[in-house]
Length: 266
Image (cartoon, rainbow, N blue to C red):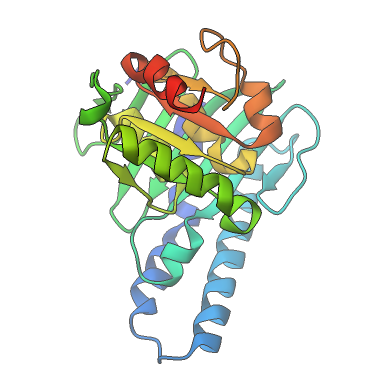
């Protein structure tokens, strides 16, 4: 179809081809002996193999730019932003809430993005200006954020690197629960963003993210009609993706809840 450009098609194919080993490894996790050491080694090898596969396949698409992952420092203005297993702890425990996240960034603009959950065979993809979609067998479903208007009806998801800011996240949990009563913690910010773009969640608060973990998801939220901002941002009418990238903190909502979520943290 017209909205799936050759470039985006190539990125989707690269992600799926790279992930064939991950799908097999996830199925094997349940068969491992009850040994923490062997599980850690298995997961490390699985992650490393996937990371290398992604670098090889994505370099075939654009050999002129680097493939950067969550272990890399961002350099330059053009690169692939990759999180090989976003939700690694979930993966290691046999929990299907994890995803591969890949975005192409050119001149500091997110051009296209793919989020793929091999455990559920869910593929989300977006290209700047052309919308965000979930892959279907015959027809791809165009995604929109939810239309929920009231906080007491909203389902909010929150994530953070606990070792960096557990106290801040605890305050967020308390503030959101007081206002909504509906809070989830999934452990995969990339998958959370894809689900927010799909209308499964109504708002997301996430702290201390590497840009590679959220790049594809940020594009999906924009293309689905949602709002993105940095916590503490004075003017919620303006998106400041550079500040989100710099701090790693973000709040994403459907359009109706933007002001109400902002008021919780004001």
